[in-house]
Image 1 (spheres, helix red, strand yellow):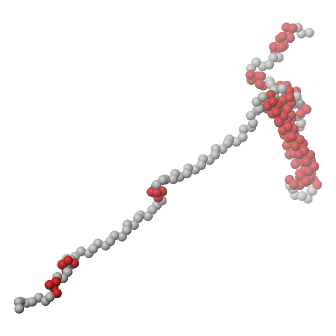
Image 2 (cartoon, one colour):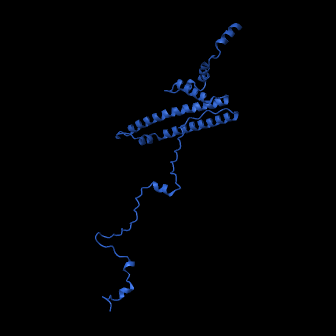
Image 3 (spheres, one colour):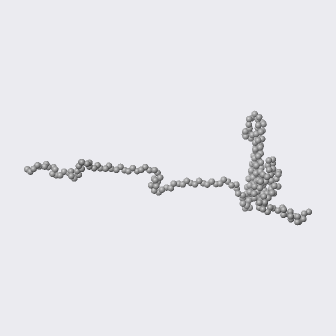
Length: 232
């Protein structure tokens, strides 16, 4: 029977890791006996993949009590089943193709429609399982968010989406000028044609007498009488 001294020594060896990294690594050791049990592993699945999925969900949601932990385990369980159903669907297509070719030996090949018609009942049952898992997943997620909001616990950040695109800047509008000359300056204008000038008056030609002015050509009163050659 172990003594008290031996119990104290054993308790020192079974304490949690002192470092932060060690505590983070040992946080999900208990999950190996719950959601990550060997009974959850089928065919080509691995316990390591399921453990990594459970650790990712627990790290993301950080359940604060058993109720939140149950909801997080429900998320893990349903996503694990959805992944399995995707592999089942791929195998159903292969089996349906082989069954069609076995039933129709004269057919040169099998199309997707032929394979679906051959195993339509199996595909319908598979789709019902997928719908059931998706409903359970979203129901558990909604309830988990409600509990976190009720106790004032911060919700995990959502998956980052694409960065928002900047709105295109409006093209600069041309500034309107207040003067007419500025408006017309931006258009090409034909040069203004000067008004026709009056032709210059013809001057007297060389060797010709200048025309007499009207005052000089006005006849005098004596011009109306004949000039006498002498006295009578």
